Length: 114
Image 1 (tube, rainbow, N blue to C red):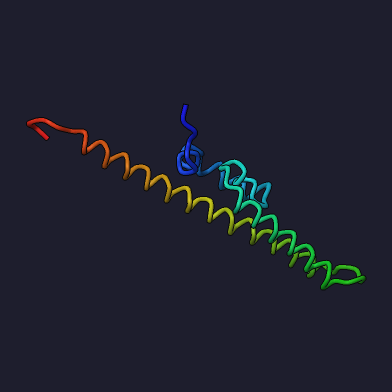
Image 2: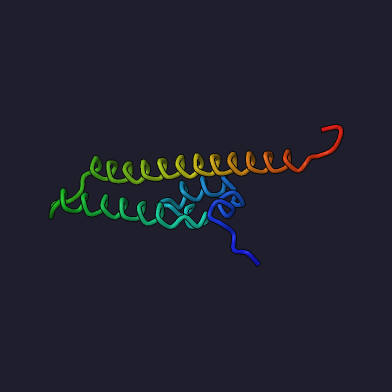
């Protein structure tokens, strides 16, 4: 049995599930669903960097409501960006696979009434 390619795995996944998983749990969970490890680790790295940046800039002082909103807003922005990227990548792969399937089916037609 052949192992599926990355494109086949991505095309077989559901785009709306990957998009939802990247938004609600956040931090690239939809990438795990799609088996896309590099974008997942990049997202985790960016989120970790966001936490460390907030901790370094805050120092030893107590966080204000504005700083808390900025921190949560940054995580929300990361979730939105990963959600959009997962959906665009899914749509591109499905489009390419459909084009390949249509080209393959047109070549196989033969006969008098083509």
